[in-house]
Image 1: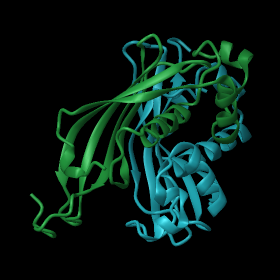
Image 2: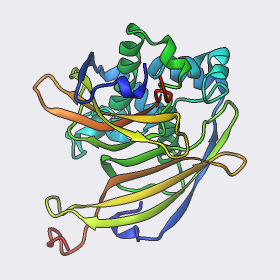
Image 3: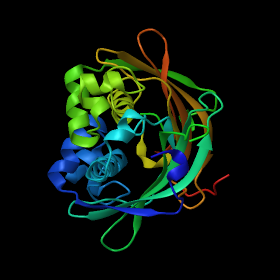
Amino acid sequence: MYLEDIPLGVKSDLGSYTFTEDEIITFAKEWDPQPFHTDPEAAKASIFGGLVASGWHVTCIWMKLMVAARFSAAHADNEKQGAGVSPGFLDLKWLGPVRPGDTIHYTSTTHGKIELKSRPDMGILQSFNEGINQDGVRVMSFIGQGMMRRRPKGE
Amino acid sequence: MKHFEDFTVGDTEQIPGRMISKEEILAFAREYDPQPHHLDEDAAKASILGALSASGWHTCCTLMRMIFTNPSAPAAFLGSPGVEEVRWKKPVFPGDELSATGHVVEARTSKSKPFMGLVKKRYEVTNQNGTLVMTMEVWSMIARRATGNAGGEAA
């Protein structure tokens, strides 16, 4: 599979994930220790009015589900070719709170392709990624980027 | 406690560093980013990264932890609307000692929420050799200092 073989505008369903209070607090104590992520009482006085998941937690679960989806598809060859290595991401938006008990449905849509002057054999596949809660509210989106091998000339 | 008024474009801060162990790389990857090049030495050697390295999300989370456990610079953070860009410039390897510098690049009051302002910071994360491994441009919502002019119109 080469970058040239990927059609744009194709949405993949990555599945859903329910955030529990325990998990929200455990993640935040380790990685994002702010009171509105770690302390249900203190969170009541915050602008969120209650405990909310770290945006990084919400985004890391996107990654977890993305990897699971990719491994369920034929993936071994892509790994050798450098797929899964990313130069970074763009435009990550935390659009709404994720509270204990919320179920977020994640998707990834092929979005764009970038050629690399420094690596003519590789390109970047961009994806538009979203998380939507059980009420249909978009809580997160970002543009992800993954390196892919380009089709060799003459092939 | 620093408030919005204490952040000026051009301000720079040093953020105390943190070592990333192999155990932590494996534990994070197992939970959130179980791709072979973050979990398996042999698979990592065969990848374009050349050796076992941390998930880029792990590096993001490590920066958050460094920021929010920095005892010298507590601020009235109210949350974040998102991240404009993250660049994973170089791999983070087991045992790397990361440190970070934060630069205030934009600061503006909120028209819809006069009690707060928005501050955009650019963080540069380097390893023990001074190599830049990640940059992040992220917005924070920060409370304004209460004054006699509470509710005054945003600039």
